[in-house]
Length: 107
Image (cartoon, rainbow, N blue to C red; front, side, top):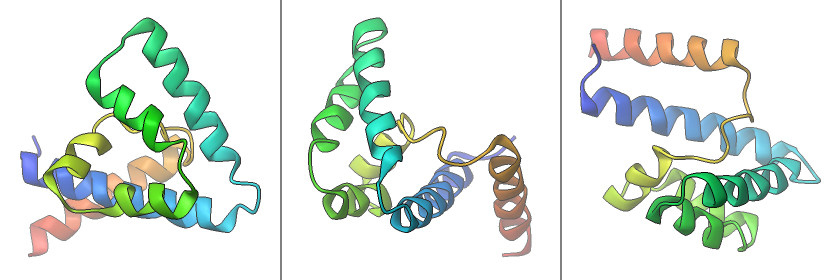
C-alpha cells in the first residue's frame, strides 16, 4: 500500500500530465468539462474543496495551472478531488502510477 507521500507524489505527477495535455489543447475543452463536473459535484456531494475548484475554474488557465502544479499543502489537498479526472485515459493513469511507484522504489 502506498504511503501518503507516495500518493501525493503520484497526484502531482498526474497533475503534470494533465497540465501538459491542457496546454496542448487550443480550445481548453477539458476546463469546460471540469467546470461542468464541479457543478454536478456541488449538486450531488457538496464540499469545501469542490467549491474551491468551482471558483478556481472561473479563472484563466494560467492561474488554474499554477494551483494544479503547486506543491503547497492546499494544492496537494485540492488535487485529491481534481475535476480533471477525464483528461487522461485509465491506461495512461495506471502507467503513470506504476512509473511513480517504480521511481519511489529506486530512490
